[in-house]
Amino acid sequence: MVEQLVLCPLCNKKVPFLSINKHLDLGCSKKLEISSNSDNTTGTPTHTMLKNTNNSNIKNTLAPSKQSNLINFFSQNSKKLNNSEPSVSKSERITILDGEEEDGGKNDDVDGDDNEKKEKDLISVDVTDHEEAHHATKNYTDENTKRKLDQTDIEEKDNENRKKYLNKISHLPLSEKIRPSTLSEYVGQDHLLDSSDGILYKFLISNRIPSMILWGPPGVGKTTLARLIVKFTNNYTSATATKNKYTLIETSATVATVQELRKIFEKAHKNYILTKYTTVLFIDEIHRFTKSQQDVLLPYIENGDIILVGCTTENPSFQLNNALLSRVQVFTLNKMTQENMFKVLESGIKMLNNYRSPAEQLKFEDNVLEYICKLSNGDTRRSLNILELVCTNVQVDPTKSITLEETQNILNNKQNIFYYDAKGDNHYDTISAFHKSIRGGDANASLYYLAKMLTSGEDPLYIARRMIRIASEDIGLINSKMLPLAVAAHDAVMKVGLPEADLCLAQCCVELAKSPKSVKLYRAWNNIKSSLRENKYELASSEIPLHLRNAPTKLMADLGYKKDYKYNPDYVNGECDQTYFPEKVLQNIGLNKAELNFLENAPDLGNIVDSDKH
Ligand SMILES: Nc1ncnc2c1ncn2[C@@H]1O[C@H](COP(=O)(O)OP(=O)(O)OP(=O)(O)O)[C@@H](O)[C@H]1O
Ligand SMILES: [Zn+2]
Image 1: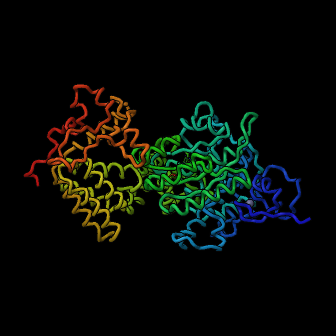
Image 2: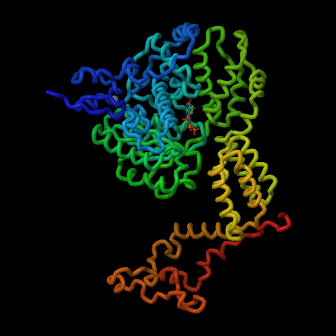
Image 3: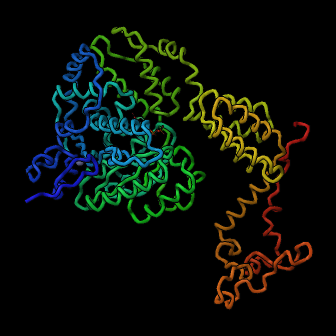
């Protein structure tokens, strides 16, 4: 009998149709591909299996002399490595966009250029790597008694395997090397993940991943959390939980076109039919999606084809539209505390020491870590980068700890990197100071902050977008020419790019600062929105007046649609006696007609810049 083979959606290998689920559960192991019907495999993936798959493109960059040191390290630490860490199942291996595309068959995708593909490859390599990472760095799990460990057991790796593993990941940045591979290694965010009252944890142990937005500052572990959620949910077993299985597709709002999203939805749908795995679609920087891109997601979230996990550093209520927000849970990730940052840094040091001989082992004085925490402002990735920079440049004296002074000396040479962090707090503080300087009419201070941001690598479009907002929010009706000017500055950046467009931004910035200001429109708009929310005077629930409706059919005309509508051009100066608010609202208002004068009820006191400041 000829067996029917299907393409595995995760590893793209041919697998017997009847074995596809087992194959996925085993983490795309080779065993099933070879001996198709064998059922004698246990549910626990082993590392040999993991190794069998796609690690071939990982470079081994560790010099042989260093390799010998590794054995030493491992024998010191092997005791710590055999506890109840969960196993890693390839079933939730992250697939980057469409696996079929990588086969090179069809290349109808305009945006899918080579670089992007390379980037995708890179991401999948990283993930493969970090799936094994916890074997080499078993760090703070033991202290983490609050959070339950992921449930499956893992086989202890022998020294040889660990050494190979360290070689394989040696080229990765430190933050990738130690990226947590289980929820129990994930530091912080107890309000979400605590096993007794973490709100997200509750979802996961009921085997449900809700569509969600993870909102938090850079480097607190949003991406990491998204990956771990999928892994944890798949591995978690309990008597009551259902057995939904999930697979992850990662993309970023900066690269995913609508076309690509549609491909993902199609793939998700097919995967579900074939494997019953629901696709979790991770979209990094989701605030960068336009409204129409956000809209594309809605029906698929609604019908369950995908579960959306969107990440953003920006306040979702400003950056995402309501239709999307109403379909997702918003989980806020808090800035890392110093204590948590220490845990991460300590595991970073352990990892770096893996690659050092006993004589070169790194030790730090306490205040050094404190200093690094301060510099990195809660951004974990940044703190690890700084640590790595220091460790690469420091002269180790085995008898002494590295001092604050030594650290500062090393960092001083690279200082300007640290004054401004385009993704961190500086980014918010500086744009805020910029906005306020314009509002206050101080053109010079505005220019100063603009220059500070641009020379530090801030995204010029981010600044341009903010200026568009300022043109309407702070200037508005009193000088409507500012809106097209700001849009033109944005356009200039799009067309010309930096450095040439810097002056265009500067020009717009000065004009905005010097312009008279008015928040009349801004306040009126807010009033209308809140009145609608509260259904004040039944503004939200009232019917559109019949005379203002269209009557394209006879039936509608018979129902009174458009009846008695007065066409303004037929009246002298367009003036006629006609109302436009719903009748119900007008009744509710009674004599208080001024209540509906949102524009005039929104005074701005002294917000207009004195003309001699111009
Ligand atoms: N909670 C955490 N516990 C342990 N390590 C963490 C944690 N959060 C972040 N890290 C470390 O920081 C690195 C970056 O984390 P991640 O990419 O998840 O952050 P992010 O919030 O998505 O950042 P960004 O907004 O810049 O993309 C990880 O590779 C990991 O090494
Ligand atoms: Zn597979």
